[in-house]
Length: 250
Ligand code: SAM
Image (cartoon, rainbow, N blue to C red; front, side):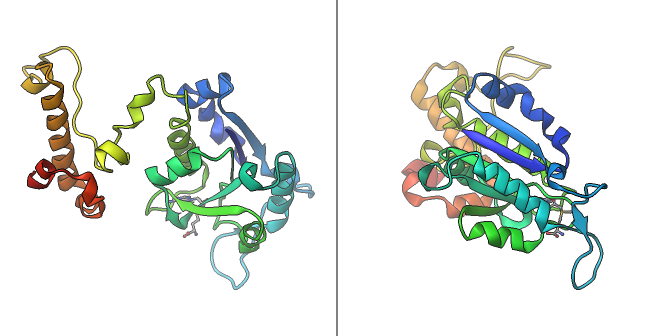
């Protein structure tokens, strides 16, 4: 997968060199290219913002540098069709980012992110590219950050760990919280490791039983209990077909 990020703070994306994403890059599974938006400015001060039309506080990112930057990035790869890019615009006013969207985006060959600052990007940029590309305005949650770089780190990590071969154990994201399929989109229950006793606290007996069926049932019950305590909305919205008789009784 190829990922381009256009930003005024390229250094903010340095964590993409670390850990899982960094290793995926080193192995050639992920081709990440970070671009400095200011390279597409032409004045002495490398200006990327201006006052908003209609007045009001804050500044708005100018369309010209974004247009030139995106044209340049887009020209460096396939224009459209199956291989074309998805343009992801982080914004609190976008659709919520979710595991489902991460799965969808992990199947795409090329993602281009446009993390903004100030009050966001002049609307015409989104309209311009929306006419010819798959453009997604995406929010990572109901709060406002100072910029879109942290949302890009969040989204890239969520997507990258789903790419084939990136996680050591391909099975491990199948049982994650929100994963469709066996877990029906529920939250994952508690997990334990050695030692068997720590500060007087043991681990649930069933996990020592070696009985796969009982362990699976226990994990499922824990997932259901945690989901109904912390995110009852997920139980209400989950596919009833994905719940068995025992789940419903729980
Ligand atoms: N005035 C904007 C609003 O109320 O929707 C907020 C602009 S915010 C200060 C600057 C930039 O940070 C946004 O354009 C976006 O790129 C990013 N950002 C902030 N919060 C975000 C969130 N929850 N999800 C995605 N991006 C976010």
